[in-house]
Image 1 (cartoon, rainbow, N blue to C red):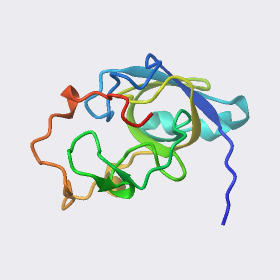
Image 2: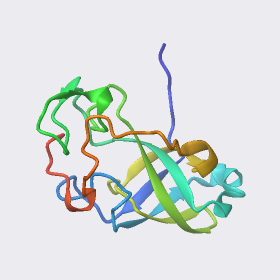
Image 3: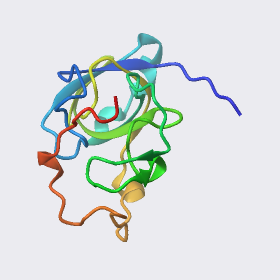
Length: 157
């Protein structure tokens, strides 16, 4: 099956290139602005009641597709679906960001790990009752990771 998606807006950040940007948003210090096209403004009603939102977007700078990668937090080659690398068949990404405030069609967010100008496909509320699994594990990742010190090194260009 083929699907066609259109952006509903874009994401503004200070990250102009992949080099030295955070690899995950949870410990990222960056802030950004999610700009939603005016056609979708009514869809934002009530979103300001949530502390966190999920942004679904396109890795628009990623052109390559690789089924095996050496992820940032490992030295072993893994299947791309066991990672969050951007070199995926459909180049889809997601980030959980803190919603600081809404001003019309603009969402001011923190904990952002997205390139400037990234096309936005969807926004969903992060709901603790739905999205937290107490028995989740870290798979092949170490439990004592300090992701705030790990930055992108351009390996997925």
